[in-house]
Image (cartoon, rainbow, N blue to C red; front, side, top):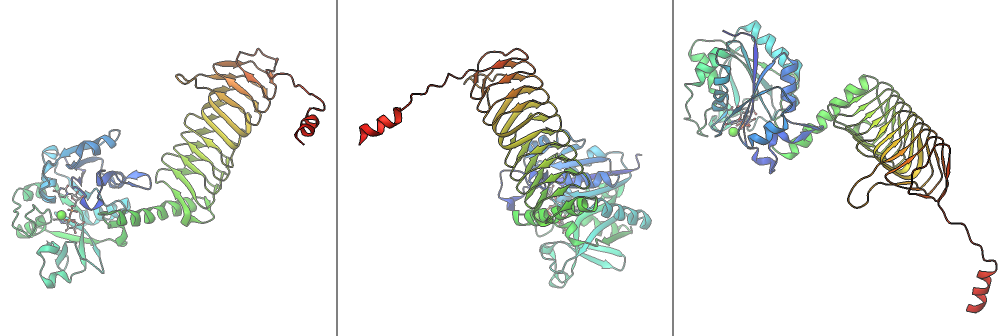
Length: 460
Ligand code: UD1
Ligand code: CA
């Protein structure tokens, strides 16, 4: 018989109240799908073997977690929470250890709470330990009927007597079971209740009838066990999670001028002595180094910013890698595939895409650099454009080290500029330029003296 720890997460329900085409457990909370949170908490608490019960839009849910190490169990018809756990029985045959049951739509539950639950369960040697909460308004939840330490029964709201409905200790839907006991008890569940469902909660009364020990432990923070049923609760949970993320960052040495307006996804990392201004969004897998300044209105998505980066107001950075000591913005747009080696300056109204810039290269204003490979210490004049698209294909611009580009230059790609060359302002560069050259393509200026005066005289 296999001992140890296993977990089952229930996520087969429809989530009707979300009114969404997206399965409930895939709705994002601080940038991660809801289901990610219980998975992570279970793992952090030491539950390595995890089964997720899916049903409604199962394929979508599985697809979103394709890269995650979990087993999937299908519940084709949602016949109740007891039936859902029973669906996982086959894949847990031979497992006789401690089984954790979680709901996929309860994202705020902390790993520490699960550890506390596990300690208590082991110490008490009960066959069922329920995580409960005291709710001033317990409406909708199952109520805990106790006799001292022993839990006699969990009664669902719809089956509860008026007196039972007064009980404020509720079932959070999180339990630890002796696996052998629970799988045998599940087989005897009946559907003789108000909802005609197989209630997982009925295993408590079954344990009592079999003379077994049942226990309950209250969470200290009831917000941890809030379930997400609609988008209002989702927003509420997001605000709580955001506060957790921000608090953790501030404790680790990150400054926030106004943490109530800083939006940092759960997986984002920020180094110490970095400062986040109001209205900043750091999303996805973003990593910000130490001593960075992120000004108002900056949005960073799935990007890496090395130490001492200065992201000025209104800049948008997506799937980019920014080396140390870079200055970006204000109002710069770094699109996917932008790689800055370090000490780069990308100024206002500059857009980059699939652009690799060597150390010290800079573009201070009004420029588009796309599909470009740029060496070190290259200077882009104002208004430079890499003309990378001919309407059918994208072409590459290569610019070697120490090239100086005057203002208002167009590079008609594909084109190659050799090192140390100078491109005259106003040039349209259609051919390769060898190293150490001056390239100039503008037409010579014509001056016709007195022309304007003559025109004015004619008019009057
Ligand atoms: C359940 C509990 C209730 C508890 C509440 C906490 C039962 C009978 N009742 O009630 O005591 O207070 O949770 O939120 O267990 N699910 C499936 N398959 C099903 C049915 C449900 O996977 O056939 C999943 C849902 O997706 C959800 C979880 O189980 O993640 C709980 O289901 P839900 O319908 O929300 O349970 P409640 O009736 O609210
Ligand atoms: Ca239900």
